Amino acid sequence: MKNQTLSFLMIIMITTLSLAQTVDEILEQHFAVIGQEKLLATSTMMTKGKIIQGQFEIPFTSYHKKPMSFRSEAEFQGMKISSGFDGTQGWSINPMMGSTDPQPMTEEQIDRMKIQADYEGLYYNYKEKGYTVELIGKENVDDIETYVLKLTRPSGDVITTYIDAENYVPLKMLTKIKMQGVETEAETIFSNYKPVNDILAAYSVETKMNGQTVMQMVLEEITYDVEIPDSMFEMPEVTAPSDSTKSE
Image (tube, rainbow, N blue to C red; front, side):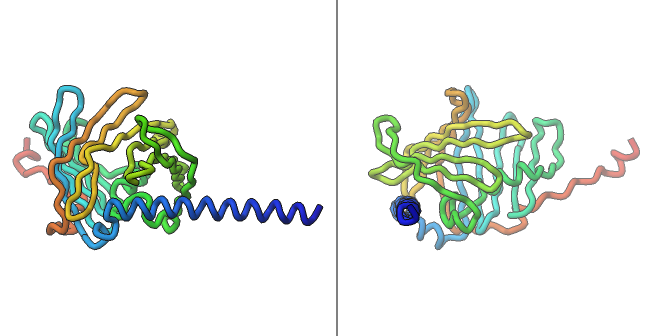
C-alpha cells in the first residue's frame, strides 16, 4: 500500500512538472514570435490611435515607460481626458465627470492599472510577479486551434488567454475581475498583427461584454525609445483659483 501511494504521488509530481514545463514552453515560443527580447531592449513606447464606441471615434495617445509607468490622453467633444500611473500612484482627469482637477485613483483602480502599465507584459516573469499560470488545454477560436492559459493574480483576478497553437500570438482574452465587490467579465479579441522594429503587436483590439462590442481600439502608430520625462506620469497639481475668482 505504501509503495502504491508513493507511486501515485510520483505520478502527480511528474504530471505537475510536465504541465509547468509545457506552459513555459508555450510562453517561450510566444515571446520568440512577438520579439520579447527586442521589447525588453527598449525603454519607452508611444502609441497613437483611435477608440471607436458606437458612432464616436476618439483619438488617443498613450505613453509607456519602464518598468511600470503609463499615461493616456484622449479628446472627446472638445474635452481632454487623461490618466497616469507612476508605478505607485495613479490619477485621472475627466471633465465628463464634472471636474477638470486630477483625481487620485483608488487602490482597486491602481491594481487594475498595474496590468496595463506592465512594460514587460502580463506573462513575462509571471512567477516573480506572484501570478500562477495553468495550461487548461486546447480550444478552437474561429476554427483556429489555440492553447488556453489561465493566469490568476494575487487579487483573485482570472485572465484566460487563447494563444494560436501555430503562430503563438494571442487571439482572445477573457478577464474576470471584481470591481466594488461585483464580478465583471470582459472578452478581448486581438487581430491585425504588425511588426515594428521586429516587435509584433495587435493593431486591432475589440472589447466585448455580454457578447456585445463595447469598444474597439485601432492603433495607427507605435514608436519606441522616444524621450518621455518621468514628470509626465506624476499627478498634476491642482491649479489654485486666481485672486479675482476668490473676490467674486
